[in-house]
Amino acid sequence: MSEKPEKLIDKKGFRLDGRKPDELRPIKIEVGILSNADGSAYIEQGKNKILAAAFGPKEMHPKHLSLPDRMVLRCRYHMAPFSVQERKSPAPSRREVELSKVIRESLEPSVFVEYYPRTGVDIFIEVLQADGGTRCASITAASLALADAGIPMRDLVVACAAGKVENTVVLDLMDTEDKVGSADVPLAFMPNLNAVTLLQMDGILTPEEFEKAVNLAMEGCKKIYTLQKEALKTKYIAIQQEEEVEE
Amino acid sequence: MSSLITRVRLKQIEQLIEKGKRLDERGLGDYREIKIEQGVIEKAEGSARVLLGKTEVLVGVKVETGTPFPDTPNDGVLTVNAELVPLASPSFEPGPPDENSIELARIVDRGIRESKAIDTEKLVIEAGKKVFVVFVDIYVLNHDGNLIDASALAAVAALRNTKMPNYEVKDGEVKIKQGYTSLPMKDQPITVTLGKINGKLIVDPWLEEEQVMDARISMAINDKGNICAIQKGGMGYFTPQQILEASKIVQEKVAELRKKMDW
Image (cartoon, rainbow over all chains, first blue to last red):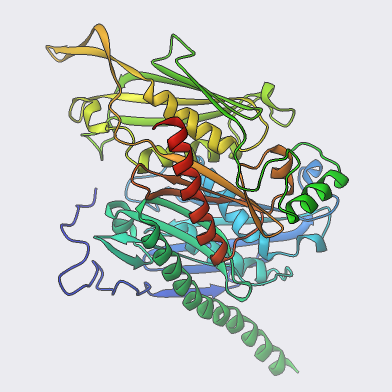
């Protein structure tokens, strides 16, 4: 068990890990790192380490789940047993089932599902290490995996949480802030379409604080969006250069 | 959670909503008729049956003794479970809970937990060792849309109706005594769900509207009017403006429901 800190924000306004209230954790994103997947991405956000892979579009298994007019998206969010302080049973928990559903629903609006009727895409997310805000980091990575798989999309989906800690609305909560803080608002966003595709909340916020948290989370999303696009470009620029050398 | 409905019908619902009307003649911001009946199951410590139009949900509360979670030794335990009973809809199948019933249970759970509706500190018999465990079991008996609001309402109504057994501790053993006291409650959260159809927000979508709608958003509001839980669902999206608009509509509806039910 980790100890409960006395103050989540110090007198100077800095958080436990030295961040300002509106500052993101350091983020590292890589695209296309799993050779067997059609698309894949890896994200590190603070101590979060998450892998996402996309397979498809391919024939559905079992076949009767396919739909005549669209592609079916399936998603599994899973946490490794060693990803948290106390070992987590590898069997899917109720939390993981719910998160798999909301992550899928956050990605669906971005995909042109009508382009590939009778097919399916499977998205697998493995949380290797969790430190708060895993559903958001998972969405950011999973959207890149879909893009890397070459699936036509309206926009990338990027996610980030805001929340309330010691009466201050803060961005990108880490584990302790999430557990001890008073509210958490994860939000997924398609910046080019101005569309919020995931919104959850727990804790207590006044309507004014909620509005502030939503706006802060969207600002965070826009910053991560830049990193997301960069990561995608990095992979394909490298491929382009390789091909030029071969020619 | 869908059953079949014809394309013509889908179009009809969409076109009506475009004009600000609905198939069942409600306004876009109207609830269906709500009926609440408490204490319907004598063997349960608390129970309530809620009718939301034709949607029917029964919630039973059982209170038992158990061990607290190691990280919260000074709190009783709340467990919420939902069953989409096969007799409630042709689309429900027997078997272990699917993602829809798990999501439903977790939304209701979050509303009650985050608003601190139950005074869990008063459920401790012996700190770190023995506490009361409150089981809230949601039983969907008829599915005609908006299971979230009906279940959340029924759960809180059942908790308000819950009687805990009196007890005494003798030589470290819990003895149940005669008589009951009410479950200690601190808040009455109310959850309101809005659907989005053709960019318009509608209150309390019923079954056929649920099949047309792009997305839904549910918000739980506590006694003080603060937001304590939110869940967006469905394949579509909301613009940031629609979210703030939804938050305002929800506040109005919650105030209206609170007045109606005198909670």
